[in-house]
Length: 331
Ligand code: MN
Figure 1 (cartoon, rainbow, N blue to C red):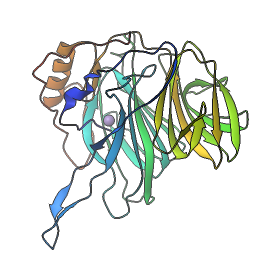
Figure 2 (cartoon, rainbow, N blue to C red):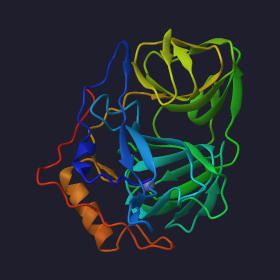
Figure 3 (cartoon, rainbow, N blue to C red):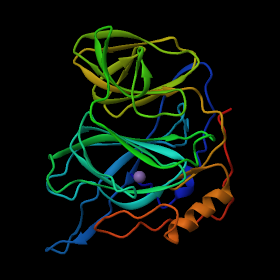
């Protein structure tokens, strides 16, 4: 997913710092149009078939959770009568993108030559390193309902300028814990480690709560966590949450209770608080304003990020904001 917000400076990631103690804060989302396509129909009325996603991170509230620095949630949306998700080639650097579907299919193509159709339960992990470009599209042959998340993970200094890579993990590990089943998308959860490469202590897990579930999951008190309800409803630490509700949980928890009367599905993200200061702008994660300026110039000049085989040309980067982007940390 590309950050198409006109006001890309919003992604400067302002917001309160890390909570070192347990908190329960609902994280607000804002709608972002991913695929704007407007036209005038036969009756002269304005029509559109855009796909709108909900952006939770970065936001005005807590701006990171561990190394997780971006979270878009989309659907469930019926896309059989429209174009679905259509994101033309765009660049990334200094981060990993995580694509995780609950329904539907997305075709990922990138400047390494990857061409993969991602399906529910499969992880698409793109490690941008110094630079990569990709496109994400609803394939021509696709299920009618699109539902999923895209997240970004900031890469630490030691690897952020490394070589790009794409990993398609067809069967991430699953486990059963205290009556609930979970898929470990990224990192480690419940003693089970996912195979996909990560560079900071982190977890991403898709937790399926059966009806009448009451479960207590072990957390690490030195990590911070957040949860997003993706189906049904769940009581997290006794707080009722409906679909698309996200809560930031802070640090300092050794366990988390999850309850669901009718069944639900919850994405858990967490990790060691990220210790480095970041500058996030458009699709780039860097350490300084000047690095962002260079990345933008190199993209616009067709350098560094490679070319993607796609039906459309590359997305143009928005102009650099008139103020200098300041690196921001968590504490
Ligand atoms: Mn992207």
